Amino acid sequence: MLRPKIPTMPTPVGVTAPPAVVQPTAVEPAPQTMPPAAAPVVPTARPTVQITPGSVLAVVGAGTAVVLIVGTVLVSMLLATAVTAASVAVCAVVVRSLLTSPNKRRR
Image (cartoon, rainbow, N blue to C red; front, side):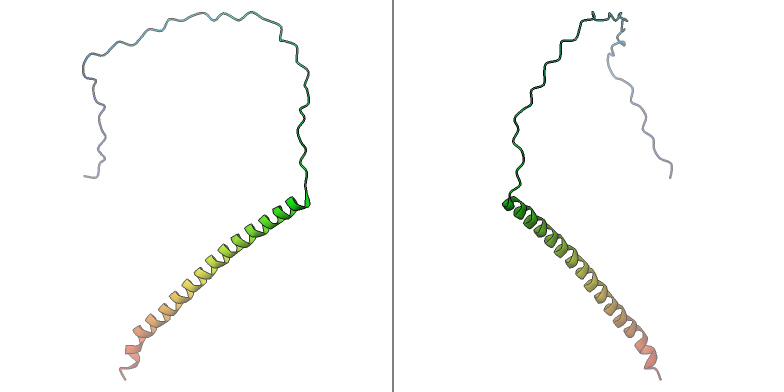
């Protein structure tokens, strides 16, 4: 009952081709040639990065916005966790009070 059922390998049906015979071949090395002379490296004229006061202000503003948004999300998650924990604690106190109150009224 608890033994796993292992599937059996199906047998091939129909005509099967015999495996192909691979004939070994000799590897012939390529003739040695001289490598071409290295071409001189020409420096490309790429523009240098220029930092302007506007770009610095934009980077600082974007960084500040990211920090404020991430901080807001994290604080809201922490607040939601705290509110949930407080409500669970209040529910636990109420349930405990309801369970112990009939014992006090029997006198």
